[in-house]
Image (cartoon, rainbow, N blue to C red; front, side):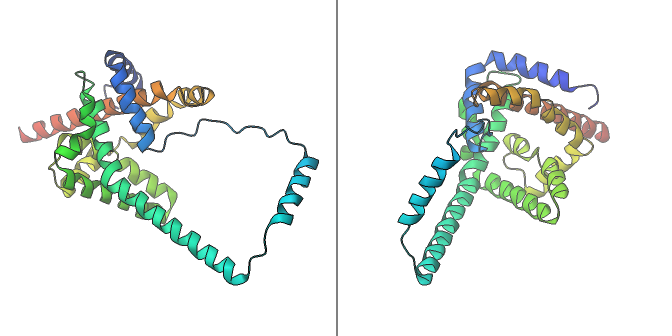
Amino acid sequence: MGAWSRKGLKEKAKIRLKANYWKAVLVGLLAVLIGGGSSSASGVASGVQSSSTDVIGDSIVNRIPYISPAGTIMIILFALVVACIAIAIAIVLNVLLINPLEIGRNRFFYRDLEENAEIKEVCFTFDRGYKNGVKIMFFRDLYTILWSLLFIIPGIVKSYEYRMIPYILGENPDMNREQVFAMSKQMMDGNKWSLFCLEISFIGWSILSSLTLGIGDLFLTPYMKMATAHFYMNLSRGSASNQNMGNM
């Protein structure tokens, strides 16, 4: 990772997090919500004796009404239709709402590295380059899924190759798809492992957060997002420097 290290990224992230803490927490909370959050709550032991379970189970079985084969088919078809509608709604929400918010969220943490960013940055894409952002993020998700269909590993590799796309769109909302993908690929060339190691370095914090039933995510999520934004900043400035040197 050149002249910068994981430790340096995380130290800068902590310093900036303290400077604008509550706004970062609110945006981090949004990150948890739009990203599905992290499963930090452990399972609860039942403590129910097996004999009692058998009695309850027999009682339930005896009360289940008889359903004809035709009725069973209708129930299955209804469940499939409901599932398809739910999936369609989830896809539409992801494309039109969640992905634009992801761009704005990443823009907030990137800008917060050098100044106290405002929460309104989260809605940046809705004001500038909305259609372009929706389109490019849709293709990012589509390509990741298609690569994942080959095997898990290619999908993971490609997901890291595309990781800088939301940051790039946060700075360049009007950049076309080919340029955005090419820029992210260039920035992540030789840096995928570094980003993976940065993310893995938070595993201890994740374990501690799980012990707080997710309350620790209020600190952990903005901390991780800030460190990743710093990762992008270094890549972005390094890429710009190389470009300038190439033009000399």
